[in-house]
Image 1 (tube, rainbow, N blue to C red):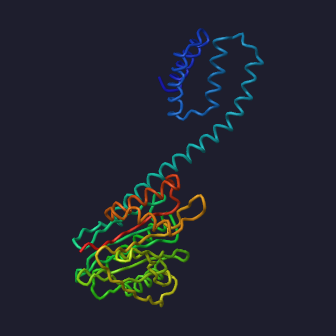
Image 2: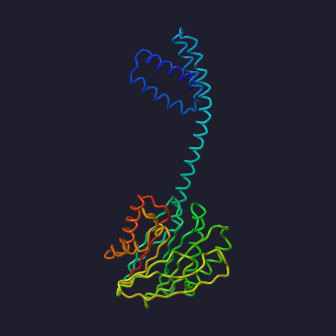
Image 3: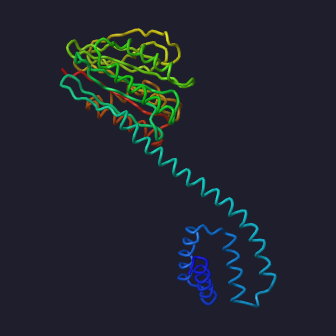
Amino acid sequence: MDFQESLLWKYKDILTKYLAVQSEQTLYLTQKLSKEILENHIPPEEVINLHKSVLNELIPEVPSEVLVSFDILLEIMMSYGLAYLEHQSLRYKQMELEMELEFGANMQKMLLGSAIPKYDYLDIGAISIPAKIMNGDYFHFDIDSDQELKVAIADVIGKGIPAALCMSMIKYAVDSLSYSKHNSPEVVLERLNRIVEKNVDLGIFITMFYGSYNPKQHVIQYASAGHEPGFFYNKKENSFVDLQAKGLLLGIDPHVTYPKFEISLEIGDMIILLSDGVTETRTEDGFLEREMIIDLLNKYMHLSAQEIVNNIYRDLSKIQHYQIRDDFTMIIMRRLV
């Protein structure tokens, strides 16, 4: 017995039972049969013809007007059936796309992942949360041949898959440049800038902060390519100042140069780096003021660096009803000894 014959027999059995007794049990059988009909891709108009045929067989005296009225329903269901099939096709394509995006996001995490280092002289905390599936932010830690700690934080102006692919390229470019002791922050940015200008389509630009921390002198040298200014916390004065560093975004002008800046850290001093997803947090009064970030840093100052960034993300996410609108990345480095 093929499915069409089986369907006719089951439908006739169900309709017979329901015409005799309108029970919930019979309706349950109908739900099961509906699943079989969907699985076998039976269009709605065929189900209506089936109902009309079985009804005419079970009740020969059904008025002709009732049977004719099914023609109206049949025409409606034919259009509905076409729309439904199109909807199902789009739904399957969406499911495939979501699976591919999820796979891509997992691959991106693996490719861009940077372990948070642990040192006796520095307490380091970092967090990077994408607003959507793919992350347009990136942070990086590495040690060069002179044992200096390299730190980078970057943000692609643009979202989705193009931004993610672009950031993967940047990651491997940074890896190739970071290890050499001759690549100071301004040199790294200048070389990255030429790579981006040659290999990235117009319309996609990258901001980046790049620093090199000397653990013997406790000095951080850094340069910025249009990145969101971070903060320097001076423990002795209990004050925050912006890490101002002017520089053009990567990928605009292949001949641009970047100035280098330097800060000495005493015990308890902190460097706070962030992406614009932090400062562009929306409150009821508009965008987040930088003073509020300082308030949060003071609020959690007694915690470890990782606990500070985690708590700040939690608080700012709560302000936005746990729906962040941009990729959120924050790094804190605090001198311990």
